[in-house]
Amino acid sequence: MLPDFIRAKFTAVLAGRLPIAEFEPWVYATSELETALPPDDYLELISFNYGQRDALHMLEALLGRHVSWGEVQREELLGYLRAIQARADADAVVNALEATYDWYCRGCFFLDHVALSAGLEISCYWHDGTAPWASLTNAQKWAYLGHFYPAAQHQAEEVIGWLETGQIRFEAAPDAQWYINYVDARPGAAPAPEPHLPSADRWPMRPRWWRFWQRHS
Image (cartoon, rainbow, N blue to C red; front, side, top):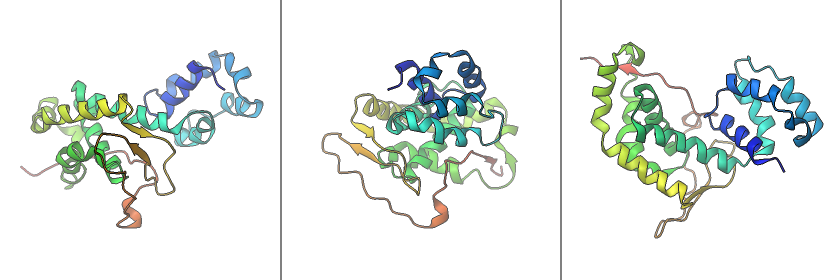
């Protein structure tokens, strides 16, 4: 079994909390990896091309053999929810709100309040082909996002509580359709529903990056 500090680092990378640019020098500086990992995995890790475009996707196969995918998913979702809660950076907030809708579409229906009240609009309404989100001033971004607060913050805090107390638990890697499997142990909660796939192209192989478009004034 991996030492806790190594497993935590692997989990942070896969959950998107630790940039690959910071992970790479840590790998070279951490001598404990040589004895903690099987020889082939260690050799692959230190010789890995961290600059390649799909580096994170390629690392999943390697690091994923040594971590709990349930913990990775928990940490990834907590990262999005804490960005919504903190309300510190407009770009991080808009990315996190759209992510809640992505996760909802992948089966996490316990996110329904924040996903359908904010994430859905951000995922769909801003793709009208005029100007990119990046062209807005910071004040304009916050003026738009302000429509979702304080409700989005309260909803994020509620889900954070479920995750931190174990009432929502992820126990396996996503399936072939990237449907997320979880256990809902909230009092009175119905069992997590089976996936309903409306169309093959509705479910991306990986959560997509975002583009947002300014609506017509």
